Length: 143
Image (cartoon, rainbow, N blue to C red):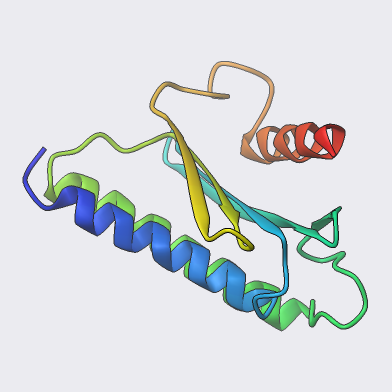
Protein backbone atom coordinates (compact mmCIF):
# COMPACT_ATOMS: atom_id res chain seq x y z
CA UNK A 1 0.00 0.00 0.00
CA UNK A 2 1.33 3.38 -1.01
CA UNK A 3 1.66 6.31 1.36
CA UNK A 4 -1.38 8.54 1.57
CA UNK A 5 -4.05 5.87 1.26
CA UNK A 6 -5.25 6.23 4.84
CA UNK A 7 -5.93 9.93 4.26
CA UNK A 8 -7.90 9.26 1.07
CA UNK A 9 -9.84 6.42 2.73
CA UNK A 10 -10.67 8.66 5.71
CA UNK A 11 -11.89 11.43 3.39
CA UNK A 12 -14.19 9.01 1.58
CA UNK A 13 -15.63 7.72 4.85
CA UNK A 14 -16.12 11.29 6.06
CA UNK A 15 -18.07 12.06 2.89
CA UNK A 16 -20.28 8.99 3.42
CA UNK A 17 -21.02 10.13 6.96
CA UNK A 18 -21.61 13.73 5.85
CA UNK A 19 -24.20 12.86 3.21
CA UNK A 20 -26.09 10.52 5.55
CA UNK A 21 -26.01 13.18 8.26
CA UNK A 22 -27.27 15.77 5.79
CA UNK A 23 -30.12 13.40 4.84
CA UNK A 24 -31.50 13.69 8.40
CA UNK A 25 -30.41 17.33 8.74
CA UNK A 26 -28.19 16.31 11.66
CA UNK A 27 -31.19 15.11 13.67
CA UNK A 28 -30.28 11.54 14.64
CA UNK A 29 -28.72 9.78 17.59
CA UNK A 30 -26.73 7.31 15.47
CA UNK A 31 -26.25 6.48 11.81
CA UNK A 32 -25.42 3.12 10.29
CA UNK A 33 -23.87 3.03 6.82
CA UNK A 34 -23.34 -0.18 4.88
CA UNK A 35 -21.18 -0.64 1.81
CA UNK A 36 -20.47 -3.86 -0.02
CA UNK A 37 -18.28 -4.66 -3.01
CA UNK A 38 -18.00 -8.31 -3.82
CA UNK A 39 -17.83 -10.23 -7.12
CA UNK A 40 -18.01 -6.90 -8.99
CA UNK A 41 -21.37 -6.13 -7.37
CA UNK A 42 -21.73 -2.99 -5.28
CA UNK A 43 -24.43 -1.93 -2.85
CA UNK A 44 -24.90 0.74 -0.22
CA UNK A 45 -27.57 1.44 2.34
CA UNK A 46 -28.10 3.26 5.62
CA UNK A 47 -30.38 3.52 8.63
CA UNK A 48 -30.68 5.56 11.81
CA UNK A 49 -31.51 5.70 15.48
CA UNK A 50 -33.73 8.73 16.15
CA UNK A 51 -35.06 9.38 19.65
CA UNK A 52 -34.04 5.87 20.69
CA UNK A 53 -35.89 4.13 17.83
CA UNK A 54 -34.37 2.39 14.79
CA UNK A 55 -35.53 3.57 11.36
CA UNK A 56 -34.72 2.68 7.78
CA UNK A 57 -34.03 5.66 5.54
CA UNK A 58 -37.53 5.61 4.03
CA UNK A 59 -39.36 5.16 7.34
CA UNK A 60 -38.07 8.07 9.42
CA UNK A 61 -40.62 9.79 11.67
CA UNK A 62 -42.79 12.71 10.57
CA UNK A 63 -40.83 15.87 9.89
CA UNK A 64 -38.05 14.18 7.89
CA UNK A 65 -37.92 14.50 4.11
CA UNK A 66 -37.75 10.89 2.94
CA UNK A 67 -38.80 11.59 -0.63
CA UNK A 68 -37.58 9.23 -3.33
CA UNK A 69 -35.56 12.07 -4.90
CA UNK A 70 -33.76 12.69 -1.61
CA UNK A 71 -33.07 8.98 -1.11
CA UNK A 72 -31.73 8.69 -4.67
CA UNK A 73 -29.47 11.71 -4.18
CA UNK A 74 -27.99 10.26 -1.00
CA UNK A 75 -27.56 6.82 -2.55
CA UNK A 76 -25.86 8.31 -5.62
CA UNK A 77 -23.26 9.98 -3.43
CA UNK A 78 -22.71 6.77 -1.45
CA UNK A 79 -22.22 4.82 -4.69
CA UNK A 80 -19.87 7.54 -5.99
CA UNK A 81 -17.91 7.25 -2.74
CA UNK A 82 -17.66 3.48 -3.15
CA UNK A 83 -16.43 4.01 -6.73
CA UNK A 84 -13.84 6.48 -5.39
CA UNK A 85 -12.75 3.89 -2.83
CA UNK A 86 -12.38 1.19 -5.50
CA UNK A 87 -10.24 3.58 -7.58
CA UNK A 88 -8.18 4.63 -4.55
CA UNK A 89 -7.50 1.01 -3.61
CA UNK A 90 -6.25 0.34 -7.13
CA UNK A 91 -4.17 3.53 -7.24
CA UNK A 92 -2.61 3.01 -3.80
CA UNK A 93 -2.27 -0.77 -4.21
CA UNK A 94 -4.46 -1.42 -1.17
CA UNK A 95 -6.92 -4.23 -0.61
CA UNK A 96 -10.52 -3.27 -1.28
CA UNK A 97 -12.86 -4.20 1.57
CA UNK A 98 -15.70 -6.50 0.60
CA UNK A 99 -17.81 -4.97 3.35
CA UNK A 100 -17.82 -1.67 5.22
CA UNK A 101 -19.97 -0.98 8.26
CA UNK A 102 -19.80 2.54 9.65
CA UNK A 103 -21.55 3.52 12.87
CA UNK A 104 -21.52 7.23 13.59
CA UNK A 105 -22.59 8.39 17.04
CA UNK A 106 -23.97 11.82 16.20
CA UNK A 107 -24.35 12.99 19.78
CA UNK A 108 -20.77 12.12 20.74
CA UNK A 109 -19.16 12.72 17.32
CA UNK A 110 -17.57 9.25 17.27
CA UNK A 111 -17.13 6.96 14.28
CA UNK A 112 -16.72 3.21 14.54
CA UNK A 113 -15.73 1.35 11.39
CA UNK A 114 -15.67 -2.36 10.66
CA UNK A 115 -14.14 -3.74 7.46
CA UNK A 116 -14.20 -7.23 6.02
CA UNK A 117 -11.89 -8.40 3.27
CA UNK A 118 -13.08 -11.97 2.82
CA UNK A 119 -16.10 -12.92 0.75
CA UNK A 120 -19.27 -12.50 2.77
CA UNK A 121 -22.03 -13.83 0.54
CA UNK A 122 -20.57 -14.93 -2.81
CA UNK A 123 -20.56 -18.60 -1.87
CA UNK A 124 -24.01 -18.54 -0.25
CA UNK A 125 -27.62 -18.10 -1.33
CA UNK A 126 -27.58 -14.60 0.18
CA UNK A 127 -26.81 -11.25 -1.38
CA UNK A 128 -25.56 -7.93 0.01
CA UNK A 129 -29.09 -6.73 0.73
CA UNK A 130 -29.70 -9.84 2.85
CA UNK A 131 -26.55 -9.05 4.83
CA UNK A 132 -27.69 -5.43 5.28
CA UNK A 133 -31.09 -6.65 6.54
CA UNK A 134 -29.38 -8.96 9.03
CA UNK A 135 -27.34 -6.04 10.36
CA UNK A 136 -30.49 -3.93 10.67
CA UNK A 137 -32.22 -6.76 12.58
CA UNK A 138 -29.19 -7.18 14.88
CA UNK A 139 -29.28 -3.48 15.74
CA UNK A 140 -33.05 -3.66 16.26
CA UNK A 141 -32.60 -6.51 18.74
CA UNK A 142 -29.91 -4.56 20.61
CA UNK A 143 -32.27 -1.64 21.31
